Length: 168
Image (cartoon, rainbow, N blue to C red):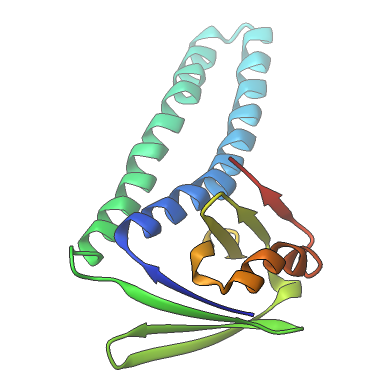
């Protein structure tokens, strides 16, 4: 199976949002739960000043992380992807692994990934995101497949990975 996807700034930003949703938000929820338990313990111990301080931290941290981490990432993406900049990704899906060929003008880079090492796959109506790390994913445009490959891709990839999720 083969797929060809042109990665533009909009696609990269959308992929960044998906990564944020599945990686950073999960970490943030764990952090928030632990901090909430800590605040409750402080209130139970009648240490109200520290409880209020940590309650403020509990409320502020999600906003600050979103602003700084995601904001920094978006600024980096926007500085790389000018109006005329895009990257062409060619994916080849084999029985045991898949290959990614990244092309920009005459420059190319090829990488191989085994399916057993993938973290998860997230499918939306127009794209598929293949997580190669907890905080990194490839975006595939579904229109980059041939007609037959497009219709067989989901069942093929579901048989190769442990976490496959369809959203939207």
